[in-house]
Length: 155
Image 1 (cartoon, one colour):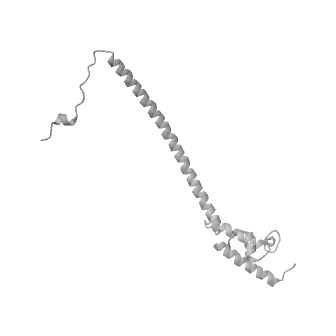
Image 2 (image 1 turned 180 degrees about the vertical axis):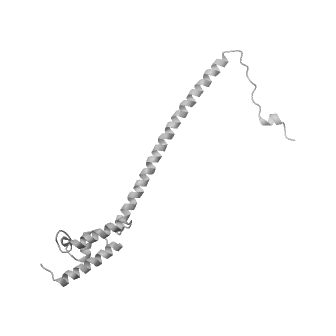
Image 3 (image 1 turned 30 degrees about the vertical axis):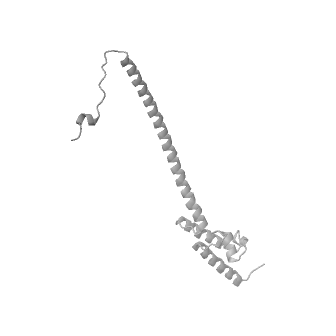
């Protein structure tokens, strides 16, 4: 079915108005900032936006403007913006988790080395005590005095 020039101009005006609304972020519930939503908002058949159809140039303009907004860091579709934000947060959390796991591995390795050193030191102390107990030439020191016996009673 052919449309008149007036109908085509009216459709183009509706498409441009819908395009402006979508790119401002006024996206209807259940919609996206895409050609399908543009067509439904403008009450135009979606197939008219593809190939050599009448509104293919408007689709290209819409996609170009949407890409320019995304390149500028603005995402008109709140849902898409939320997805981008959540992906970035997810990546930050993955990085933090990886750093935490690496730190835990380092601390576990340090703990194992410390325990091994303590065990070796303990074995050396036990060996030296046994060697000292077997000889009579080692003199034992008197027990350490507490601070109250050294200073004396308070007056």
